[in-house]
Image (cartoon, rainbow, N blue to C red; front, side, top):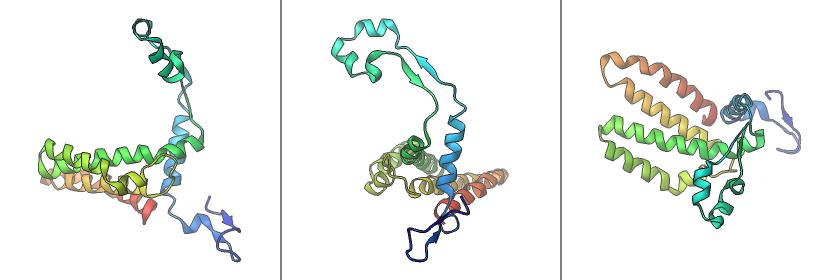
Length: 176
């Protein structure tokens, strides 16, 4: 990865890709992919009692047409397509936690999460298949802010600063 040189971009010089990008998103994607490879493939059948009560037109709309669902590892391409929505959802949840931490109001947290979920800029950066570093970076910076605020709660909460520092390293590696 770090020795990757792309001769087709920045023509005629080329580009040392591994040393001119922020590798956080790629490292996160490969880490998720490697973890998912350890998931054994399994099939889960729909409960027969539920299928018996559903009309046939509903069964045709179910995933895999009401037959057993198959779960297992995903390809790296599929993981890369799903990273933005996964991290977009995570950042919405982290904004909820940050707002609850700062305001001590769960209602305010729900409102903040709702607003985060409908902001066009956030939606644009968390669309499935849109593989760009903003999705991971926004989640990482949201995590940094929440952990940092959490570490300021009491004098004994300073230990939360350690994961805040690690999250900041992840944020810097994905967005700079």
